[in-house]
Length: 118
Image (cartoon, rainbow, N blue to C red; front, side, top):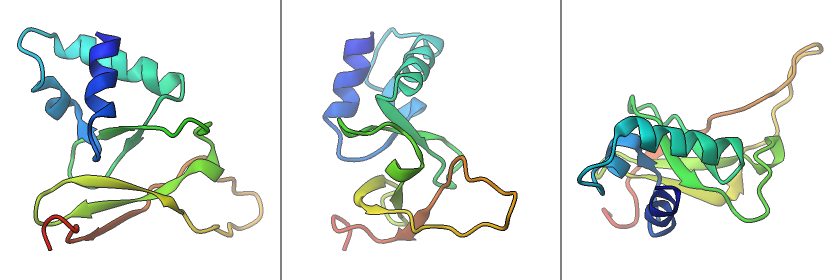
């Protein structure tokens, strides 16, 4: 199952929800797929994206990703096709927080029309 889910994510150029991954299987339990995604995330193979659509999406990390603050990048949600793309070459801008605050994660989603829908 791990290899199958990995291959699905590897062959996509967009982030996928659990439901979208589930559609690639005829007889797989949703809980098995979710556990696989959780294992991947715990081992920094994938990252999750909350793009505001109500479904968390998942995408493969780059080989050199450690899933820390410096690895965070912007995501793009197309308003027309609904696909979420990782803009891996566009890091999240540095955020200056007040004293005593510490950044653990950030979610930066830009919404518009992707190149496929333009």
